[in-house]
Image (cartoon, rainbow, N blue to C red; front, side, top):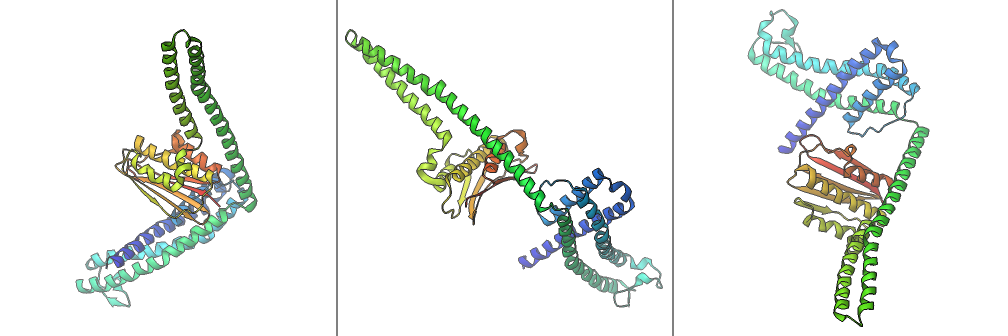
Length: 385
């Protein structure tokens, strides 16, 4: 029973979304026809087409990626939009308008004179009492609603797919965009690699190397003073030993930033399993069958999950978080969710931007859904063939 009710509710929601989309299509197709001389200019045509492309993507729940502008393609879409948008939108208007009219007549049949057409509804049955109004009109209302639920979603989906197909970039443009993306991500990788090398050199020079020099000097002084002052030499040796332990700790911290030892020791699955105890918020870890994963992908996936959880602990005010890592074919997916306040934005220079750059370096992607009030969902997909 609950399943039937849920399916009916889902159908009504889809019909409502489709109806709004088609009514908007009718309005904008009419504006396109009326304002054609203005919209045929490059800038208005591009913005008008982009608006409808995003609307079509939202209806189909498809991500709409940036695309190169093409006046020829946008003008072709204007013509297509008018040709198919006007009849599709008119059909939606008639369908929804009849639903509204049936509801009005059902409630106000008594206000019309007996000879008026609104008293004759559905197979010519005269409406002259509340009993006939509530039965005949209710049957018509349900029939029209079922017809709208059946017709409007595929009609709106067909229009949206046509919109995306007409405005889709050509193979040559896709290739050019791909080359541009790869060039940018490779440049980011080289810059990040250079910055990482400089950081490691600075950490070793200012930290570990300075401690090793101090240790060498203490041992040299201890060796020189050993015959005359064994107690001073012993104290210097103890100090050198303490400095050695501190140098080893610093060296381990530097090595950990190059490649986390937990990955080398436990692998990606084992390393992710340890996060629940030190994530900063109660975290549920769910890991599917991953198979063999390249070391570079393991490192980026580990970094993405740990950085996302660190952001949850620092900024989200969440009470709990969840990590789901799975693999489908050659694609590794890591999804990090929290029940915090939302509003996460990678463009504000947070660690999320670093996750995106690391994922792009492996031709992967990062997507963020974080409406105000939450929840926040960070999804990282990495190719690991």
